[in-house]
Amino acid sequence: MSAPSQKNDLFRRDWLVARHYFLARLTTLLVLCFALCFTLACATNSPTTTNARTVKDELNRSIRVPIHPQRIVSLAPSITETIFALGAGDRVVGVTTFCDYPPEAITKEKIGDTVRPNIEKIIALKPDLVIVSTSSQLEQVVANLGALGIPVYVSNPRNLDGVLSSINGIGELIGEQARASELTANLRARIEAVKQITGSESRPRVLFILGTEPLITVGGGTFIDDLIARAGGLSISSDAGGEYPQYSLETAVAKQPEVIFISSGVELPARLKQTPAAEAGRVYRLDDNLVLRPGPRVVDGLEQMAARIRQH
Image (tube, rainbow, N blue to C red; front, side, top):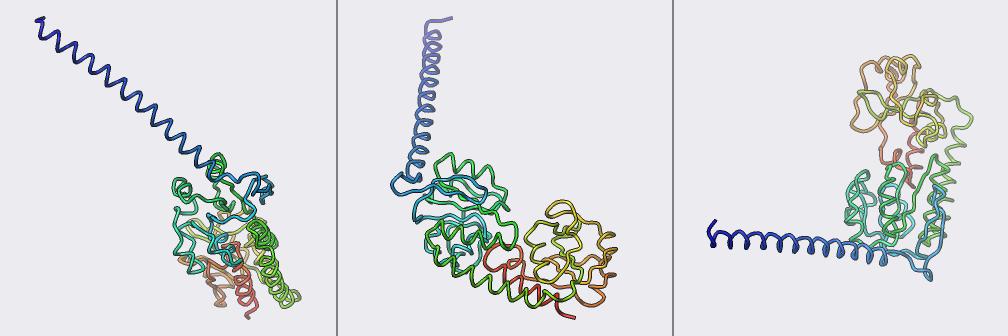
């Protein structure tokens, strides 16, 4: 090998070694910077000892939250509606793409949908409180945000009483106890009014359809099942396993529902047109946002459902 060729090989080797060393140092520096940014984010979002308190969320988790949170991110439409109903909508800095009520909520920064929120966007909003619903099944998101020092409160209403309890809990959490007490007292009075009307009447058999292909309905222990009972009906699927089970058309027809509620955008299967409900013209569509969101407007859904069940 000639001397010039050897020099070129040595130069190439030394250059590759230097390049490798530079990239390795750059990678290390970037990792350190990333870690520092996350540490600062944690420090920024973590409530300090002097302005925070420890509370229990609706899963009985202990969390450290600001005494009066000012930058709230909501990860469920029902929670967004609750915060606005409590007069704290101006403190909401981020919501999901499904949060469309009240109209003011539409103008808030979107952080993704209910199932796949964008963690980076949430962090960028610098929230001092995030509120999530168990209906979204966001265990990993809750864990990730908690690891960053961002307080996450989990709402978990299981029935109508649970919805009212959750409203009170969120009101206490964000410093709006008086508004929450006033709101829930009004909602309880409306619920009691429905009870007075429907309590002594016979209970027609009710089928609530969330989807078809396969048929999806509601099981016992859900707040929709509770709504049906409080509205004066008897759900034919209360004994089905699971909260939102698949249900055979044959079983649905055999149980002869006298009233059918069907979600928006879902067509009634032909087999169910052979039921007393369909033959009597008692197949109704309710506003899904009123009966599927466990927030303040769920009592509107209860009243509408009771009015349909009482029709003869």
